[in-house]
Image 1 (cartoon, helix red, strand yellow):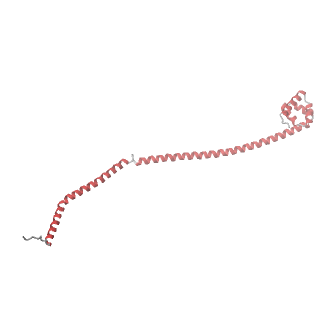
Image 2: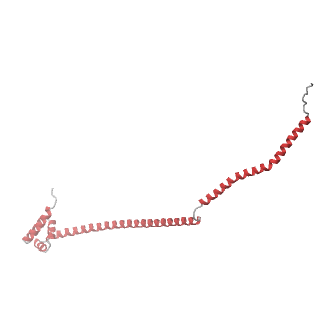
Image 3: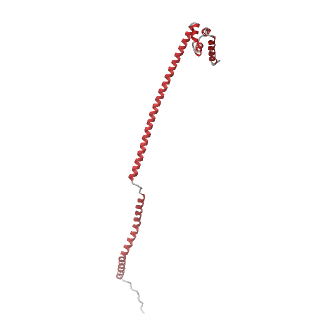
Length: 203
């Protein structure tokens, strides 16, 4: 029995098979194109929906975060507060100026008072010097008078005043005048003079 060997397909047959295969693929792709387009649209819608939802949430959050009240009311309140602060600062500045003026006036019055005190002290010193000079001159006059005439004047004086003159006189003149005085008056003047000398410091 003769053996049958397989025959090689020709080039034309192979080309025909490839062409049929490609045509089949194209037909299948064309048939599934609408479904693929719908699937792609669905995925695109799904991708866009979260973004839209995120934008909506952001809008809602923005609405929630909006400040309560109008901005004009807040600005008006801030302007009022600033005006109050400015008024208070102006008041404080005015009080400080008044205080400075008062302090300056007090300082001027103190200077004037010190000047008046110095002038008064100088006047009193001059008066004391004048009185001292007058007493010294009067004491000298009594010393030059006759003892009897001077004693007549001392009898009319206050004892304290007379003792002051006797304390300033020379001892001999005072003794001569006191010898002409009544004994009780001479004794009283002597007691006053002794009391003054008792308080004098001793070495």
